[in-house]
Image (cartoon, rainbow, N blue to C red):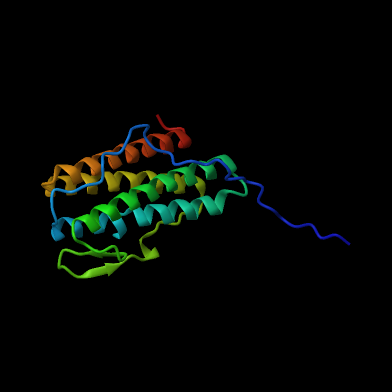
Length: 180
């Protein structure tokens, strides 16, 4: 007797990063600056961070791909763009003289390791999209705050380019929710 197995037929072949169709500036810094590296470590793996975004998008994609393949493919494409942001931030942190060790430097100077406790794991698709939109908005606010604190046009050019992707993600996520 042949058993019937459930399979997920959602194919992720050909999924590409979903991002603004603009080049990134060269990844460079004006000089070593541990304070700037510490700020970027928060963007890298703090509460509001690329690490959190990637993990949250992948979790959401995993939970919906069986039933909503097109949406899952979109979330994976956004996660891939967030991975590129993580990579760019890591390069900047190292160039600035910092370490990429999955710990964000808090205001008191103590490192805090990234944790999945930072994630929002809603129970349905609409709440997933709302949480993703809010996370993108918070990331933009944090990047803008860091741009105001960093006096290095090279670093800020990369952060401003990342913001363009985050804004694009918000627009796309809102469209997926049927918002205008």
